[in-house]
Picture 1 (cartoon, helix red, strand yellow):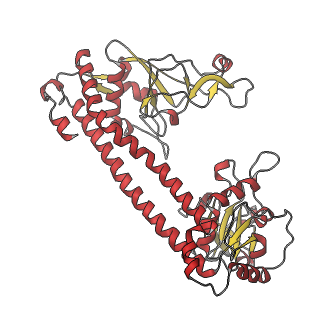
Picture 2: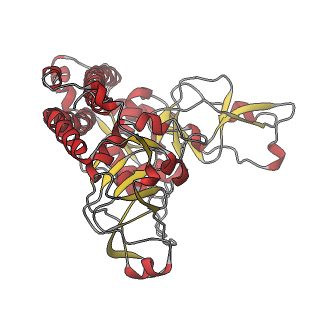
Picture 3: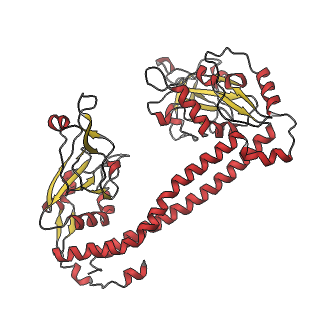
Length: 452
C-alpha cells in the first residue's frame, strides 16, 4: 500500500489554493424523524427506516425496520430519494452512508443533498477524512452528539470539481487494495464466537475430555458426586418438573436439577427503610451483573437488619443470575462472584445460586454454553411474552455433573482454548487498527493536497 501511495504525484502547493467552505453552503441539509411507537399502521410497511446502526461508511442497504406511508404523512419522518449523504449526529458521530434507495431516517441522522459546488463522493470522502475533527465538536456525556448547526458550520477544503473527481478516483484506487483484507478480518469475530460456542458444547457433553476419561479414573464419579450433593442439599419441592436436555453425556456423569444440588436464594428488596444509616453494606444491582463479568465501578449501599448480613452475604463461587430483562438476548445473564468486595449482599432482582460440590468456573461455563442458554431462555419466557426467572424456575434447570477431577480438567482445557481465541482477537484488533491507520493516512494525504 505504501508503494501505491508513493507512486502518486504530489503537489502540496495546490492545497493552499483550495477554499475552506462550511458544509451548509454545499447542499441542502435536514434530518429525519421517528414515527410514534405503538401507533397502529405506522410500522411494518415497505419503506426502510434507517437508524445509526444501519450506517456502515458505505452504500446504504435496506434496513430491517420498515414504516408505512401513513407514518410519513402523520409524523416528522421524511421520504428521502437516492442521492443523499447521511451523517450520524449522536453516539457514533460522523458515521456515514451513501443513499441509493428511497428511505427514511430517524432524527439522529442528518442528510445532505449536495449542490453543484461539490460531488456526493467527494463530500463523503472529505467527511470520512475529517471525522476526528468532527467528533471533537461533540457535546454531552457518555453519548456525545452534534447538531445540524455544528454540521453546517463545519468547514472542508473544496477544490475545483475536476480535482474533486481526481481525488475520489485516487482514494478509491488506493483503498481498493484494502477491501479484501478488511473483508477477511471482518469474518473472524463470528468465527471466534462459533469456536468458543463449540468448545463449550464439547465440554458440556463430555467430548472435550473423552481422552482424559480413557486414561484417568475418578475417585468419585459424577453419578456418585451428584448423589452426595443431593443428600447434602435441603429437600425442596420443585414447582416445575425438570426436563433432561436432549444431550448425551458420558455414562459416569449425571444430570441433576439445580434445586437438588444447590442453595437458591433471592435477594433483599430495596425499600425506604433501607436508606444507609449505621449498618449499611454494599449490594449488587442488576446493572452490576453482566454476562460472564461483573461491573463493580459503581456500587450502592443499603441498611441491613441484625442477622441479614450472615444470611445474604455473598461467598466465593456464588452464581449471580439476573431475574428478568426486557431483551431476549439478555435473559438469565449471570456471572460468578469471586469476593471482589468484602461483605457484599444482593438486591432481590438478582438470584444467588450456591452449589455444594461443583467448581464455580465449570458452572459458569455451562451456564453460558449453548445448551445452558437454551434451557434458560426456554424457561424464562412467560405467558405474557415477558422474560423473567424465579428461584423455582432456576431450580428446575438441569446441569451435568462430572467427577471433581474431570471438572478441573474441563475448566483447564476451556481456559486454554479461550486464551488462544483471546490471542487471535488481540492480533485481529491490531490488524484492524493497521488497516484503519492505512486508510486514514491515504485520506489525510488526499485532503492535504498531496495527491494532486
